[in-house]
Amino acid sequence: MHVKTNINPFWLAIPATCDFMASTLMFIALTMVDASIYQMMRGIIVVIAALLSIVFLGRKLYRHHWVAIVLIVGGVAEVGIIAILFPDDSEGASSSDNEVLGIMLLLLSQLFAGSMFIIEEKLLNQYYLDPFLIVGTEGMWGTLYYFILLPIMQYIHCEGDATLDKLCNYGYLENSAYAFAQMKDNAWIPVLSILTIFSIAFFNTFGIAVTKFASAAQRSTIDTSRTILIWFFSCVLGLEKFEWREIFGFIMLAFGTLMFNEIFVIPYFGFDTNTADKIKARKEETDTAGYMASSPQTYSTTRNQRLLNVKGSMAKR
Image 1 (spheres, rainbow, N blue to C red):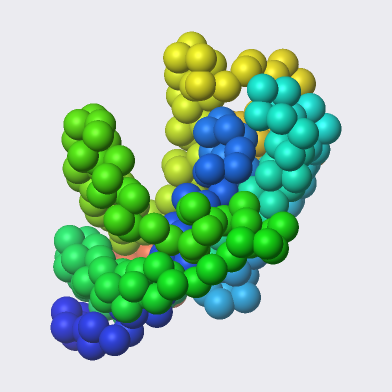
Image 2: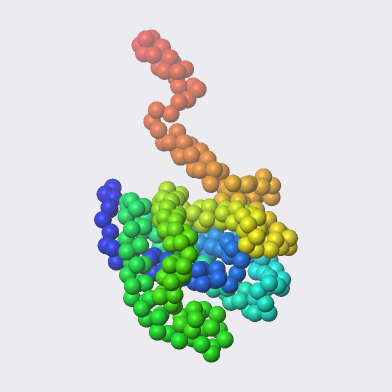
């Protein structure tokens, strides 16, 4: 079988566009919600990637997958509702409105992110590509998009509109000049920006590698494992207020994620019947049985006795 190793870079523009939309919406949403809520809400990507894999990759989900999806959706919903009902009082009366808009943008961004995962897995099934090649090419497209759109955003006024005003930076949709002025005033901003670039580069490269050697669903599952660390450090550093009600949503999200990825398997009620290990074991048994039944060298307990009887008959003749 010939494995294709060269790909038209325009094909990689498709997942790059999804990543462009997802990243932009997520970073806008991050200015409206706490980091832990931001990360927990991103857990819905497991559900989106799983459902899209059914439609576009022909995957089949079993009982434990569907129960896990229900738990993840329930956990994400609980965290979102708590964030809206109990906003941070230090941010004023508009905090609740910002939380709602931020959560809506996060859900929309995860639809694009899930689409990116599925498209990349579809391409990786048809080509044998180096993860660095994919990340580099997608990064080229993303840079090109921002080179075109950022100058345009500098001239988009959004004052006076209640919704757009939340997305604005001093009256404009984007204000890059002010961003560079902030970097000049605070030396930590360019340092953190450079570290963020390297972090995202390694994050995307490792993510592509997981998709290549595992699956898009497993990539999205691993992606949600950061939640507890972000929540912990955000509270310890005083970046957000600890909200104990979110614990229930986190437990549902974490348990559902582990169950979906079969890290935790419930050995009752048929939840362990169609795990990857059980399906593989059944396939091996079927293949072995089929080989034994069709093989001309199949061993038989009476084979030696039949050979002795034949030899004895020939000797008497």
